[in-house]
Amino acid sequence: MKHILLLGTGGTIACKHGDNGLTPLLTGEELLSYVPAARKFCQVESVQVLNIDSTNVHPKHWLMISKAIEENYDDYDGFVVAHGTDTMAYTAAALSYLIQHSKKPIVITGAQKPIDLDVTDARTNLLDSLRFASSDRAHGVNIVFDGKVIAGTRGKKERSKSYSAFSSINFPYLAVIQDETILFYIDDKWQDRESVRFYHKLNSNVALLKLIPSMDPSVFEYLAEHNDAVIIESFGVGGLPSYDNADFYSSIEKYVAQGKIVVMTTQVTQEGSNMSVYEVGQKAKNAFGLIESYDMTLEATVAKLMWILGQTSEADAVEELFYKTIGHDILWKAASR
Ligand code: ASP
Image 1 (spheres, helix red, strand yellow):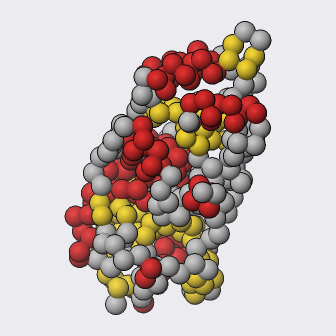
Image 2 (cartoon, rainbow, N blue to C red; image 1 turned 180 degrees about the horizontal axis):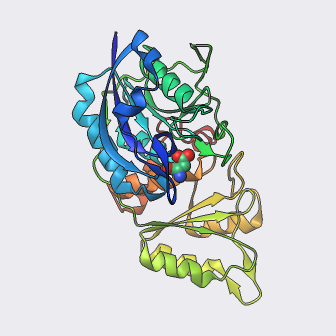
C-alpha cells in the first residue's frame, strides 16, 4: 500500500465559519477524517506546515512547503498539499521550480467549499488527490481539482466560485479522474532520467505592471527602481505603448542598461505572446532584447523569475534559464528556434 504525506497549509478546504467570515482552522489530521475511503488504497500521515488563507501566502511559505517535502521525501511515495485556491497556481508553479525531476507525485489541492459542509467539493478533491498521489504513473508537481490533473506550471484559477475553478492554460490536462479511475492523457514519467533536485533560494524582488491605455511610464520606473525584475503585462500578442508625450522605450532602455530584467507577457489568458508580430512589439524586442513569456502563465512567469533570480542576476544566464522548459512550462521558444 502507498504511503502518502498530507501537508496542511490552510485555505477554504480547512475553513470554519467564524465571526469575521471563513478562516482556516482544521488540521491535516482533521481533513483526513472526512475521507475514510482513502484507507482502501493508501496509508496517510499528515504534517501541519501552515494554517493560513492563501491570500497571505508569500514566497517564504513556498520554501517552507518545499522543505517539508524534502525532509520527508525518502519516507513517502507521494505528497498532497492542501492549500487555498486563491494563490494555489503560484504555489504550484513555485514548487515546480523548487522541486525538479521528482519521480514521486506532489499534488496540490484545495476546495471552493469547506470540507465540513454537507455540500462541498473538498472531499472529492482530497480523495482524488490522494488517489493520484498513490498512482505509479504519476510524478512531478500537479494540481488536482474538480477531476482534472494540471501540470503545476500550467494552472490558473479562472473561476472564483464554481467547483471547476482551475484550467490548464496553453497545455492539455495531464489526466482526468472519473469514477475512481485515473485516465492519463500524458504519461512521461520514465522519460526523465535525472534525479530529484531541491532548490532552496528565491528572490522575491519581482514586480508586475499591468498596462492600461494611458499608463504613465513613471510607474514602470518606480517598479524597476525597487525591484530586480519587472514583468509587463501588455496587450494582445505584445507591444509597448507610445503616447504623445510619454513612451516606455526610454524608461526601459535606462533600466535594462542598469541590469534590470524586463519580461513581457500578455493580459490575454489563452495562447500567449509573440512580440515579433507587430511593430509596437518587435521594435522593443529588437532594441532591448526583452525576454517574453510566450505560452507561459503569469503565475509560472512570476515563480520562475523568483527562482532564477535566486540563482543568478546575470542577464544572459537569466534569459537562458527562463527559456529552458521546466515541468512543461514553456513550449513556444523551443519550437520556434
Ligand atoms: N481565500 C481562500 C484561500 O485561498 C480561498 C480558497 O481556498 O478557495 O485560502
